[in-house]
Amino acid sequence: MSGIIDAVRGMRDVLPGDLDIQARVAAQLDGVLASHGYQPIDLPIVERRDLYLRKLGEELVGKVYEFSLNGRDLALRPEWTASVLRAYTAHMQGQPLPLRLRYNGPVFRNERPQRATYRQFTQVGVELIGGPAPRADAECMALACAGLDAVGVPSYSVRVGHIGLIRSVLGGLGLAERTQGLLVWSLERLRAQGVGAIRAQLEHEVEEPSFDPALLQGVDDAQAEALLLRSLAEIGVNLRFGTRSPEAIVGRLVRKLRRDENHEKTEHALALLEQLSQLQGPPAEALPRAERLLSDFGLPTTELDGMRAVLDLADAHGVASERLLVDFGLGRGLHYYTGAIWEIYTDDGLQLCGGGRYDDLVAARGGRQPIPAVGFAYGLERVVQAAQQPCEQHAAEVLVVATEDTSYPYALQVAQVLRKHGYIATVDVRNRSIASNLRDAARRDVACAIVGPVEQAEASMLWREPGAREERRVRLEDVTR
Image (cartoon, rainbow, N blue to C red):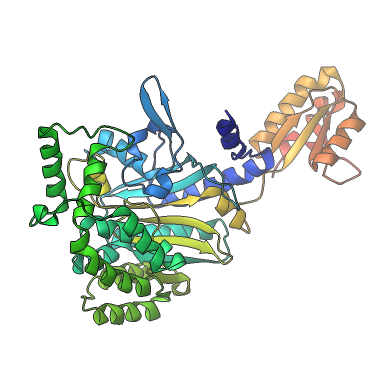
């Protein structure tokens, strides 16, 4: 019970004034996404737990709110992409590609609340399914910037990395697939904590082998795992115990058997990644430095062309070149990314948006065939905080007051007329005196429309502006904004 209470404490109440601003910012962002051809989609907050166990990454998986109900393992949605692709594979595979989808709704993560970080928050974003690199990447990156410009975020930077490039580099060093994955998703930790922390993690993941590695010579990891699973099943070894699946147990065993084979290559990769993860800056500076570094390690530099193409097309979309920063240590933490990735930050370091390419995820979610895809999401609460001019002017408010009970039906008619002309109109329902209503209107900083038998007969009202001391008579037919 204490855990539930603690989790609820981390949720955030959004009160009327703040919610009004947040809703209008969301509407402006939604308008920008819609103007680029993205169609709306809405999906359940509760999904099957296993939807999020693969490809999310250990850090985010550990923050998922999960529970069992009626024999089903369920989870609150921690992000939208997996849910959108689940809906795509279930209902939309017959639609023409590319398919542009946009969404707006709450997500839940069990993490410590801090600056503009809540356990329940709102993501506004898009998924471009069937859009290959580099054009679709640049479209999404530019669209993310267009939304921030529309809501008045005054200054921000776009940090661009490329998971595909890092994977290609590690593959060129001859590393096993699992080791590649562990290193790829340790980039930001490597930059923050150094090689020692990653080496210790590798030691923990891959302990000394208990078997002769020659047993698996000439087969890849997937074949080795399938072979071991079959062999252990045939001799009656029970692997279904504890919290780890048989596949996870066998995968760990394979990594143990591969350790001696990969150790020297891993150290070589760590030496490269240590330098590469620190490399960041404007494209004109960072890309040539990366090219020299790869050449020094005897690796091809052609993979840099993919990143260069995305950046060039972002410039063609109108993204200001001074906003763009290359960051080879960017990891994003979500394990489904396969290509370009990016994060957008304010000048004081608040992350507003993140996105990237995930070409393997449609197939992993049950798609009939591999489909290229890319997307991004804003953290709405953070965008609201960063926007200097979050939205257009609030509609003017009016309190309509009837001086007598017999005039109340006319007051309702006056309110309807005002609403038709764009006002927010409320009618006094407490039957207060005119003086009390005028004080209430002044306290709320709204206009006041007073009506009685004379005004009803003349189809008019007495109008008092916020802060004014006198009224003026206005005919209903003359009401304008």
